[in-house]
Image (cartoon, rainbow, N blue to C red; front, side, top):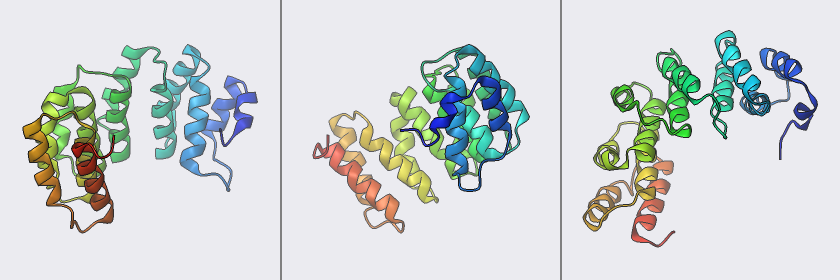
Length: 211
């Protein structure tokens, strides 16, 4: 259920004015811009064009992230243009924007950019490194497995948690299952509770206890 049902009563120009503006004091900023962007996107191709323009104009990270969400909202329209925009955002200064751009390439099932994404495995932001793991798992599962195993040793808990989550979701052969569970069990006493929970769940999923 939308948090801002009034958005559906606004025309495109009114939605754009809201998006450019500042959210109400009581609003959750991220949710506000996300819902605005999706409502704009649902206007069709004119909505896509509006979001492409807004992405170049707005300055708040939450506005940019909302625009990315709107651009990648299904069904996909203007895929080539959206892909080009997402690739351009990989050079953004804000790590969350880079991570969202990579996630957007997952949503658009963009499989032609592996060589562009792989270097981000060593990005200083754990959010970006985690998005690379999700990209590989979703679009290149045959390449993802050894990278996920290595990522279980990442210094940041966010990346370790992502690696565990993705391993739990992967289709593994019997030897990979044995190896993955052995590596995951090494993290059952991880310093971060999110990692411990992700590891426990992943092991159960690999063992078939959780389907």
